[in-house]
Length: 418
Image 1: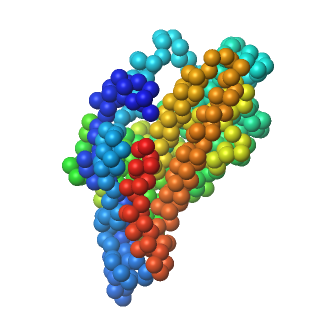
Image 2 (image 1 turned 180 degrees about the vertical axis):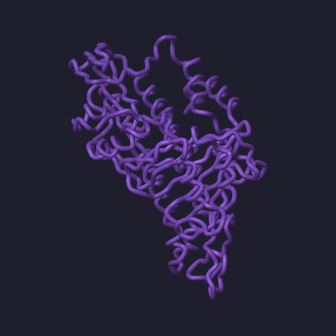
Image 3 (image 1 turned 30 degrees about the vertical axis):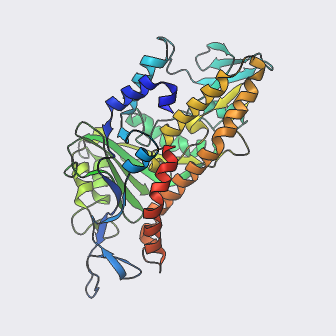
């Protein structure tokens, strides 16, 4: 999509990124149970109560080849790029100076009639007029709340990305509580996970061989990826109720988030609360991360808006406002970019403002099937990852899950890339 929007932008983003498709990616056993007297499988994690292949912590369950699917689709190998870098490049090439405003959320809008555009009122009282209004304002979208006549508690500030965007600690604590109310009003689904995340200045011990891995455990998992420039981006997803917050930092307790994570992913006996001893790599990244860099947020997604739609008159929504999804496939920003490309293509064909409504409906019709499929894949993948421990003890299910994941991944990647 970026290449079609502007090849120059695409090339600069590639140059700013770090190639990750040249190394191993995949799923690993994240832990081992404490050895029990008389338990023949000892430290191994078994399939079907000790039958079949056994696994030790750190063993690969599934490996992904992200290079060949990209090359087969005629695309550049996968790269990772900092979100702020992408934003700066887009601003440099695509947006005139002075166009972007921050802290100017939409309070209300009014359709002025077919072909006559829309009147927009911002929270600071500013009024604006436009032919088209596009709500790219996140999962708690104000534009969607107005468009679909949702409750007054259905919108609010939205952080970007699973890492929590630019939220400071006070904002994150406030949002943890407010999001529970917003989710109910906006018909969004709490995923069941709270997510801790950070980008740490650290050259990983496995950087030469591994670009992306998920360490799987009971009711939690730990994700890490090469962040470029001798940095690692990591995510720790833990299953628990929504709205939770960590104790505030004090002199006697200066690192409450880090302390919790070091316990949740304890690599020394007696292990975590489940008695599981985790792979050393999770601790390596956690130990390299200052408390101030760790963000926490509950993860929400939503059901596809197949019947509700994404448009009404000269107004449309895109990105997380239209199709919020779990971060497992790394497709939130990617699908928002595709939305932008399709919107631009459809609006470019308009010769009369009376045709805007029809062009926006076409945009929705062309995007809904793909985004719905990816939303479902991301949600299913997240649920399967956290329940993998249970599946591995059910006859045939564990081996079948691993086999199908390995076989299907090239097709899934090819679908995402095209």
